[in-house]
Image (cartoon, rainbow, N blue to C red; front, side, top):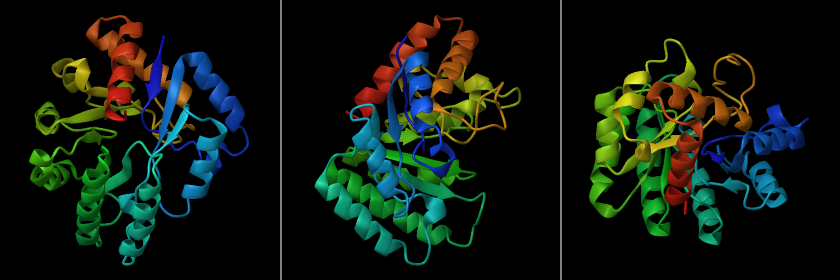
Amino acid sequence: MILVDSHAHIYTKEFKADIEEVISRAREAGVDRIYMPNIDHESIEDMLELALKYPGFCVPMMGLHPCSVKKDFEKQLYEVEEFLSKGGFCAVGEMGTDLYWDKTLFEEQKEAFRIQCELAIRHQLPIVIHCRESIDETIALVKPYADRGLTGVFHCFTGTLEQANEVIDLNFKLGLGGVATFKNGGMEPVIRGVALEHILLETDSPYLAPTPHRGKRNEPAYTKIVAQKIAEILDREVAEIGEITSQNSKTLFR
């Protein structure tokens, strides 16, 4: 079975002690690629080090996470732009909006979002969107770019089927991870109502571990658990889920 983890922060401190074992378990589970979203200027070095150690397996993105958007966000975005100009990145991300932790810098988040959309269009890259408690607001931000060829994924999608269809209509994918396995996660209507061609699998490691590991550190090997849950809901073979969603990721990220 072939799997792709389309979103994992495996360069963070949570993996410093056993990253080789984490990579080994991922391979054993069938994962043949891990896409790594950046967070901010402090995460770049560790992320690129991992990409160099596991070329073609750990693939980096470049962007500024909305929770890292501060008053000086433009300074950080100059650094993002500088790295993107060097090439070697599969997407602009992780970027987006977040109304869960702090609402006071939402205007700055929106401006950082627009700037990163322009960078993605300029470099012909997809974007990877974080939108916690802000799906509708983020859909509204994406709409002006719909006719400019911008594409990407709404990572950790936890919205309704109606919102999912809005995202798909914008030529974006849905990233499904551990929440899809939660008893009260609410993702079954979306999984049943959306064609597999629009879905990417992800873990968001080290966060949001799937059942039965909920509350513990997440890791790319658990992509298989997400695939198994989707297969169970759709009454399809898990290998088929892995094959289609993996191809979706590789097509999106080229």
